[in-house]
Image 1 (cartoon, rainbow, N blue to C red):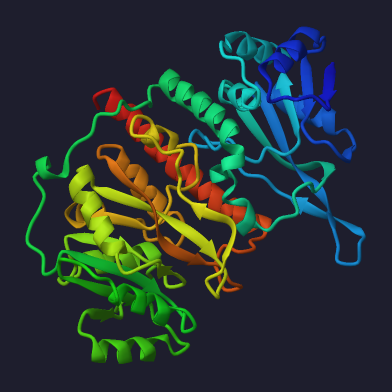
Image 2: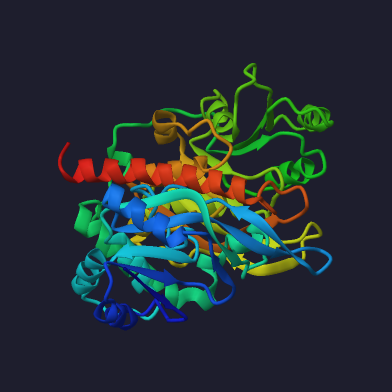
Length: 446
């Protein structure tokens, strides 16, 4: 009733054709791992029963994972997964290592594949599945194959060593967007023609939201204040009720340099996005709002000038730069320079629905930002804004290193547990779902 296939290069289109030709049962199971697999009691029967009940084309399940303990032994830990929604377009979406397909649906999808891929065939296959069901029951046990921390995995898609893989994944995603009516042609509005504008006290404002970063925020502020520009600028720090001495430090800097605007919100319900909204709507905010995290520093005194020049030269509403990963002492660390060279003028805003971030530092044209605003969250708010802006406007790019992203034990994304990773991914997938639906409606003229 169910055929099992394992140990095969499922990323190759030819492999999937061979599986489709040889499958004899009504269902087929692909094991994409290469290590230990132990199916739970009646697990296959359970997955088939749910497929019959729901009419699913593809199913995946929560499971247990064997991980290495400090003493060298292995312990069994729960590995929950998340729902695969319409906007779950990441090619690294975690389905686990056991995938069950209705054989007829599998064959139909493979028959529709008209490009031979070496790496992206399984991604292509799952995007063609009409109904994917997540079984939130722990149905099998496999072994951990990637022991890196979450903060080390998140940059794999910009690693030059993975470039051939990413090119294929982008082609698959772009073809999918065209099939469902969400693809956007490279036609952009220009900021000067959108009817927004106004007068501003300075040309640019560096925006730094902060909460309890006494150890790092002083360096961030000083690197911003040390910018050398041919225009007036200021630094707006939104201090979200710090309790560790950050507030006193900022007050002392503001007392000697009036360019530092130290804002303490009256509200107590603000995330990072909400802090950004406060800064952008502040009467002292400049025409361009430029991001700097409280952990990080600009790479030199010319960063702000380069960003403003890019706005004017590239006629864009948002600019994204390049950064260098460093340790706390500013020594370069892997993966090194994060430049997002996968971005292209023609397809960047489509491929943005597949990847999990657009890069940094980010800067925005304030008049537009005041009409859109950021989600009041502390994760994904910048990604949501970038997708929204790219729906209509060009995003400019700078491939010079503009700031140093310092990794230390206090980074919020350095080592997340699976529940937090899932929550973050679920939210970004939701952002993508909303944006996907908006683009379909826009293409339909709604």
